[in-house]
Image (cartoon, rainbow, N blue to C red; front, side, top):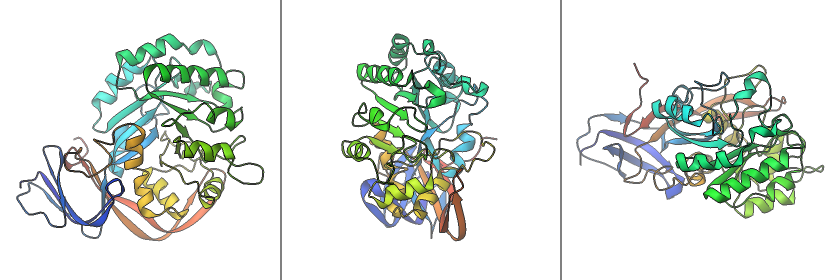
Length: 378
């Protein structure tokens, strides 16, 4: 068999297929062609990845990538591809009034594969640059127009809504959540809900979520979080997890409290997905790229294979792309990440000042996108 690229000698970690073993991986025609202990054949490019981990291309389930429309957001190619992230999900940067511009000027022009949730607010998160919450004025929530956007843009994953003091205030929190629920039910899509800094009890949010919906910023340390006053995981959170609500990290520095995360994991509630909530770094924020978030949760006690699952198979399933992404299966998209595990003395923290020491961290080495080594344009 002939290959465009052959990754030779690495250890394939592909939790979705139950593989953790020395394997070669061959790519041809933009797709995974073969995975086996030894692949022979001609290859236009051979990469010796001995001593490294080879995983499916990483998926960041929560970031903000409308960088041509809002100064707080990031270029997906600069933020993702150098770190092995081949697919990213924009968490509602654009609303129905701005999504066409996001689609044309960012999604269509990016080497990174970009999916998107539509924000319930007409202009998405544009008002954040001015420090104004997007649904403080509920006139920006226009149900018919948001629903109609799914007919125009069927690739949309669902609706994102932020239930947060700044975003909705208390008065608009439940009306926003209920409107978002109606839209995703009508369009057969899914809901992503920001639960950090909620002005309403978390139970009121979770009872409205169905299997496949995503609760993001699950380990935030603010009021109305997942832990009760005794530090125990609330029953409503455990029940939501059992019925298939996706628990997403979306670190962002300010939305992931390491003490909350540690307590939840110790009580048997690990996250389903690891993500960054990538935006431009802000002063005093302890924010990491996806490999940094992965390293943090490895240090918190998640097994290595489960860390990899949370950035490959699990997010692929969360967005309904498990047949194409999240696994190194022959015929699947030709995306992969090559990672080193570095030994040393490392510290990971959050913006609340909590820190955790680590002896290991993930270090991206090589990114495969579309069956070839990714290289920056130019």
